[in-house]
Image 1 (cartoon, rainbow, N blue to C red):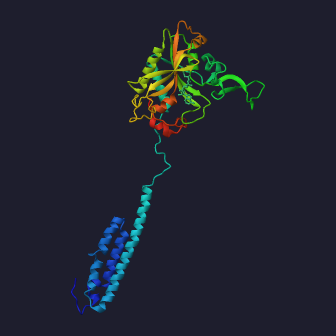
Image 2: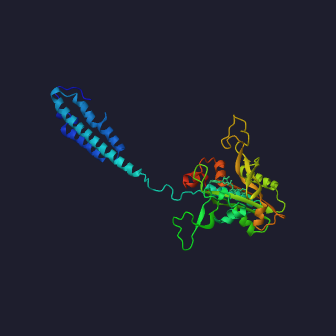
Image 3: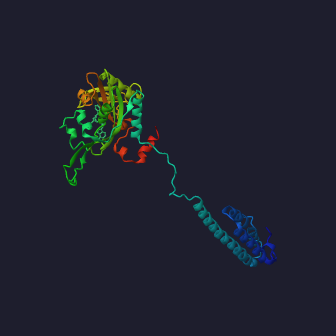
Length: 382
Ligand code: FA5
């Protein structure tokens, strides 16, 4: 910095000459205009307005001027610095706006684009579980048999030894198919013409078709869709699935049925599983039983053990699975099978119900509503 000098003329001080100040200012303004981005502008700012910038150094020279020259030189330098600061501010705003516009374009996300053009699918767990059950029996030599969903009443009821007045035939359980009578409109006709057809209420008619179509020995597993006039709620659906099992051979007993059921629950739920039979009634089996399987979660250990409650079996130790029994000889006769020579066992259960306790599904409605968020976690298991 120069020392005070009483006879000092500001125009004689090199750094404070008007043209010198104008040059410094113009240089700064050109550098500011040339700064292509905010980083470059930051460097220009340091170089042209920082402590060591030409204008800051010139400003320091003012203090050395005589009082009468200070105002003039101060005004000149002050104006130049003001112009430079203003230009800096304007360029800063310009560059920030450019950056924001660029970021908006570069980082834009098109939310309407499909996130995955080929999303992985999932099979419905009812299908998967049904196939798993079939596999267990196919491995034992059983054959998969199917029947129609619109079934003759005779197959669905009569041949299965349902008496004509059995409550299951009533409208509250069965979807009857109204018949079209020639020459008469069905419209509004509550009675309708009886077509002799129903939507099958269970898979047991496939037993009848299998016995009529085949000669013993017969070993069939029959999966399929069934229909009842039940309201859709957490534990019922009007359209559900059953798996039926039928064996007809010489010398079959309840022991064979029990051994087959035990094998099935071990194959599906793991070693150590077992079943128990409780007396029940079905017109087409005699004797008949309700079949329970050991709770596969607590294995019966929750019974009488409040420290270890089990949600799956409500601490009962057993889970009800379905109905079974020895094929009623009257059914064998209806199908042309000699009951003196052959005996048979049958078993049937609901797949939705098994899926509920096997996979902790709390509401059966989730299985029928077709929401992929339900099926996706089950994946593609085949
Ligand atoms: C029968 O349907 C017999 N045919 C089973 C059978 C076969 C017995 C062979 C003996 C020999 P049941 O009406 O109990 O039985 O139904 C069997 C299973 O179907 C029930 O345990 C239940 O799991 C399932 N089920 C019945 N109604 C519904 C429904 N509305 N929604 C979902 N599952 C149902």
